[in-house]
Amino acid sequence: MQLKEYFENTKGIGVLATADSKGLVDAAVYSRPHFMEDGALAFIMRDRLTHHNLQSNPYATFLFVEHGPGYNGKRLFLEKIREEQNPELIKKIKRRKYTDDGDEPKFLVYFKLNRELPLIGGTPA
Image (cartoon, rainbow, N blue to C red; front, side, top):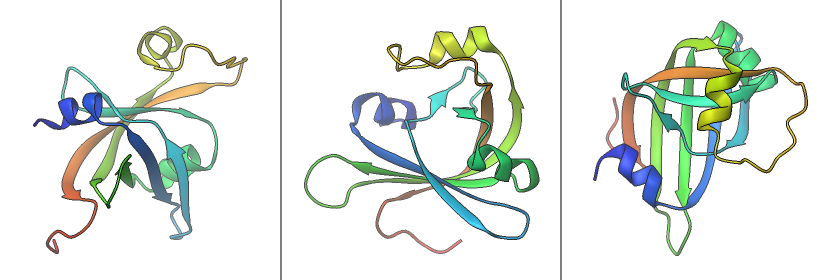
């Protein structure tokens, strides 16, 4: 199963972990990544700690835990390649249509996938 299909068909919870230029770590709950036509993965972000960390350190890890028994899921090792503020595109691709977003700025942050591992196990780099 391709990664895009996996995330379209699998329910679970995701956590995006980032660190700033000094190595101070943050982890935040995020929805599944968006798969863009150019092959990039993207997340919609508000201007909070995760977004701030990515301004000085482009690396992130997305940990996805599948709903159900056991410890199944994915770990995606990501590298930020660009970002944009595009309210029309963000409105088009966001999955949660019912939330009141207010006027807080949102960013579409694009990543390349450097490595994919299962939730548990995997081999060292």
